[in-house]
Amino acid sequence: MMDWEKVFATRASRMKASEIRELLKLLEQPDIISFAGGIPDAALFPKDAVSQAYAKVLGGEQATVGLQYSVSEGYKPLREWIVGQMAALGIPCKAENVLITSGSQQVLDYLGKIFLSPKDTALVTWPTYMGALGAFNAYEPTYDRLTPMSNRAAASYREDAEKAGGRVKFAYCVPEFSNPTGETMPQQDRERLLDLADELDIAVIEDAAYQSLRYDGESVPPILALDIARNGGDIDKTRTLYCGSFSKTLAPGLRVGWVVAAESVIRKLVLVKQAADLHSSTINQMVIGEVAAEVFAPQVEKVKATYSARRDRMLAALDKSMPEGVEWSKPEGGMFVWVTLPKGMDGAELLARAIADYRIAFVPGRAFHADGSGENTLRLSFSCASFEMIDEGMSRLGDLVRREMVKSAA
Ligand code: PMP
Image 1 (tube, rainbow, N blue to C red):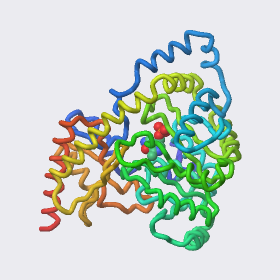
Image 2 (image 1 turned 90 degrees about the horizontal axis):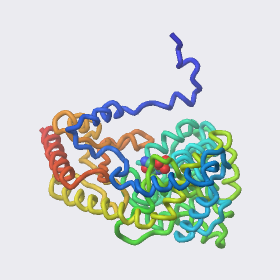
Image 3 (image 1 turned 180 degrees about the vertical axis):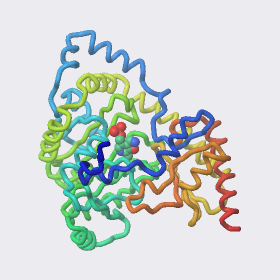
Image 4 (image 1 turned 60 degrees about the horizontal axis):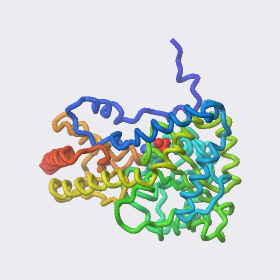
């Protein structure tokens, strides 16, 4: 028998299935009400528009283009459509500032690849998107906690990074309706983050996967827009990389995302893409381009109307069902509510009991923490849940938490 561990590179040692993976497998059982998956509701996919776009591309002269190899930068008309979207967000840029990728997940991998040497430090929030940690882990970084609010001195980040054997390379955050907390970073924190990044001379990775899904509240300028404003309107002088995705607005299965940044760093990413997979699926980029041009705005409105009603329902159900001592976020958009249980309770243990005794599921919060903390937290997703599932599920969750609180007090 081959002993694979002996031939794996050191970077593979950090690629481990999470402790909750086994439990989450149980979700396939049909009687479980799940708030665990962070995926869009498939009932909302613009199926007709996608099918018409495939027919249009394949039925005409464009078919040979769609089925052929193409440039690593991405399909030009789609990049130009993105330029228009970015301009509306206060991000003036050119097609040369845009790289199309296979989902925004691929950008995170590429950014790990170009920035992180082993032992370098990546700044991330506690908690952060689990998939970003998964992508960066392959490059063997050290993590330090990003807290724009705390006024922690740049020198202290720098010293800790040196002790760890490298230097700070970037700060990563999900500033809008974050996965996992649902929270939005206020403008003043974004400005402080840019100040810190200036002082440390590092890149800022702005993961905007949920940016289009605002249900209420005031919109906040993207970090890249603030960075451009600080640099006389010139994106090529900025340090922020904005990662966008069609997964939450159109459909994740086509795997189309993008990154917008200074041309000099995009040129480096194009080389990485060329070496990794040459380019993202030509036909899928063309189809996304067609669908976006035809139905993007009404599609986003449809998704927002459905999810915002589910968000309202979940917040109301939590109000009704949760015992005192439990707190939760009040997201203005996105797909997630973040629940903080009283200290001493453990989200992973709670999930085991939730599945066994109450037939409900969620994601325990520890998996989103680079330092393994956050045991008393959990993530609930409302994107795929009907009102009935939400009411019943939150009522069961309330009963479970109450039962466990009584047990731990006894
Ligand atoms: N960033 C965040 C914060 C996400 O939640 C996700 C998907 N769960 C991604 C990036 C990756 O999305 P995609 O690759 O489908 O664009």
